[in-house]
Amino acid sequence: MPEQTGRDIAPATGKLGVMLVGLGAVSTTFIAGVENVRRGRALPIGSLSQMATIRLGKRTDKRAPKIKDFVPLADWKDLVFPAWDPIPDDAYTAAVKAGVLERHEHLEPIKDFLQSIKPMPAVFDQYYVKRLQGSNVKRGKNKRDLAEQLRADIRAFQKTAGVARIVVVWCASTEVFLTPGPAHQSLAAFEKAMEQNDQSVAPSMLYAYAALMEQVPFANGAPNLTVDLPVMERLAEERNVPIGGKDFKTGQTMMKSVLAPAFKARMLGLSGWYSTNILGNRDGEVLDDPESFKTKEESKLGLLEHILQPEMYPDLYGKVYHKVRINYYPPRGDNKEGWDNIDIFGWLGYPMQIKVDFLCRDSILAAPIVLDLALFFDLARRAGLSGIQEWLSFYFKSPQTAPGLYPEHDLFIQQTKLKNTLRWMLGEEQITHLGIEYYEKA
Ligand SMILES: NC(=O)c1ccc[n+]([C@@H]2O[C@H](COP(=O)([O-])OP(=O)(O)OC[C@H]3O[C@@H](n4cnc5c(N)ncnc54)[C@H](O)[C@@H]3O)[C@@H](O)[C@H]2O)c1
Image 1 (cartoon, helix red, strand yellow):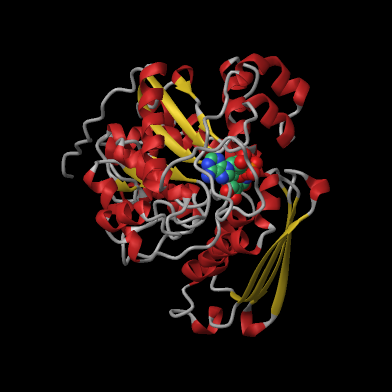
Image 2 (image 1 turned 30 degrees about the vertical axis):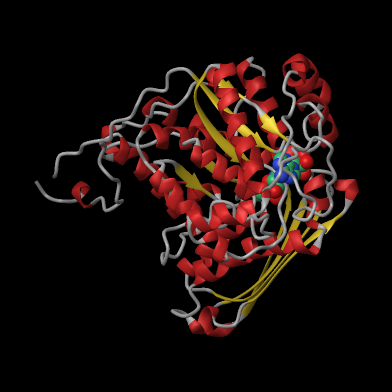
């Protein structure tokens, strides 16, 4: 067995600034959740970094520490949360408006803390998010100037808050659908495009550029391209910064990435998958605009194709009808309902149906993902990793991968990849699940 050596990981000393783009439902549920946990008033349920264990060595070794005790993650007490948002509400007001957390139980007791988080003026342009209007917006002579203002925000925050490290997580609205173009191919082209106010440069790309230039990791929780562009991938490598995206994998798509691999594992066929949602929060309102919905739709549609590999299994998956709908329905607020009708077929082609009705809470599912991504991106940076962090695809609907590489969408392959990466970082043996040694005669 080759000797295992881990990576040099800088210690997690000092404060970690988790800079949030967008101070809406997901961000405030995340921040308020962390503060409630810090005060011993709740548990960080849904967070792998806090609650999951990791097996080390053989099953008979009985070594299974919690991940947070195995890898050097930033401590809860060291997290601080600045944010940008075009809507000037502080985190308390935004959380009350979002209506996710029970006001008396989880917001009033930490009201002072939440009120102290006031969003910095955002780089915002209604062309990219049609259904939003905001007054807390930066002005500049062109997009490059706006990006420079974001860089200045990052530097100023680092200084005034005395943080040792920073990560940026995009928790802002989904932008209109864009495809990679000439402006996204090189740094020179991108910088020129910013100066010329090129329409193919969306606000999210300005945040990404600013973060990477400041050597700050960037995770993208929405389906916009943002860091999923050649220019950003190269910049991340050059500046030695980890990046990742896109689109938090929470409700319906998480279920899809569990169910579809099960059908494929058993060689059951699929003829159709119809998914529809009703959702009444601001995210639902933004996604009611067809251009923002298109960005989301692309992100939600891609995974079945990658999991099922119809080109390898034409008899089983050659003719799948896949449809995804999101319907804005205000009475439901953040408490989304997602229905799936799945038409499968088995032995000799006999049809069967599965119905899933997931009454989920969008931001309750997303908040622990923000926490884990912030902590793991910070860990990746301290471990000297840069560029796309595919090991964190566990958290994303459309995981970013190296050019030419298809993404792994199966949740349990992603989980194995994540845990094996942590083992690799710390110089522990990989777990292959071969297990032959338990049966070999001495
Ligand atoms: N909750 C989930 O399960 C889930 C899953 C996957 C992805 N997402 C994505 O996460 C994002 C946040 O979701 P949410 O429910 O918190 O939405 P939200 O509408 O409550 O919050 C988004 C916030 O972003 C702000 N914003 C918009 N453009 C901005 C900009 N350019 N700069 C700074 N702030 C900006 C908005 O003003 C708003 O306050 C959305 O893009 C959503 O699609 C959420």
